[in-house]
Image 1: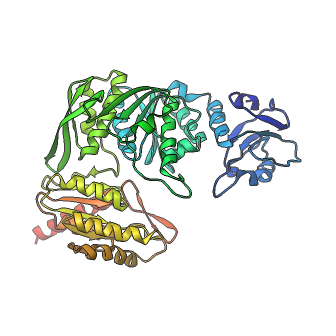
Image 2: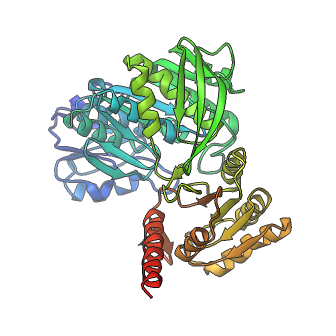
Image 3: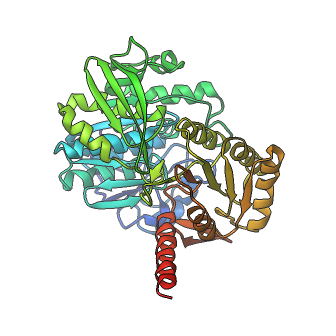
Length: 495
């Protein structure tokens, strides 16, 4: 296609060459540049695409998009824009022929709940016969094709490419997590969302390479509601006014407050046959009972957000209820059916705040014992280890300290740091460095009514040791432990 087609929605200055030049591909990664490509120079904190102009020209790039003044002597077209990330977003949409316009687009932003809510929405819409793609922290789902995610919100080119694959696969809708970084860095600037959802806001992602302060973090979250048609908001958030500031969308709310358009009431905590969940009544615009096999008050918020959204697709409530009972999110309070006598689950909680929220939620179910297994990553702040040790010792009845991603540290040194926090509180514990052996210990010593949490790994299926990633999936480890126990039992019975 002609370069001018890719630039049709962008303000730009031609510094050199001709915009009617023919280009065959678009790239922001110098390693992927091909003959007759157009290369977009992105400026990052660690790398600057402008430094690779000479390299991409040698590879045959026909045009470069820059935001800095550059000197190029070769016969290539040079286009200067104010913001190359914004340019990449709009050029990517044009390159793939605006695939988002062929899908009903749903974006979800917030500190917590994005991942679970996306899966709940996908589950409901799929059950209703509306094939739906998904982009999020864990994976990208494009029909039958699943791809592991690198970022919560991928780079704009990758988003548009995923949309195009979804259209080709027959998807009718897409639900995606929209991070504050994704909004700040224009990764979704080429998308006009049909629906935007706000889950909640807490102090997070503030630091040198993320947001300078909480005000910027909140502002970036609010940008989603300046590029969606209909916004769905958590009415209970103390930061709702800040998120609504500057919004251009229709507003609808959900939550526990009576004033919410969809209000949750009469929450019941459910526990049966090794499963735990919640049941509640919805009042307001709808009156219906919702049940979810995911525990905690936050499950009410996540499922209610999904219900509020799916009403707009005219999905009947019987379908919603069926889908919500079946939904399971890999590594997010993922219950592994092992025994009707006790509950075993996997969760991604890998810092003190997340672990505390999880354990407080599970204690509300009054388990016989709450068992917490976790480790901490190597080459990370030691304070996290002390804090997680203290949290588990304070809230769990028994702590099993094991290995996570030791990276370039010795696992036993990391464990000893965690135990400093455990011993400070004085909780009961055992330290077992090998994660499979630690899981086996939990299963072997499980008692009726226990809730056992394997925390930290979540959806991850690897262990990182000395620069190498080795396959390790806790689901597989659990099955191996159960199989070995069954084999041992058979051997003993046969004696």
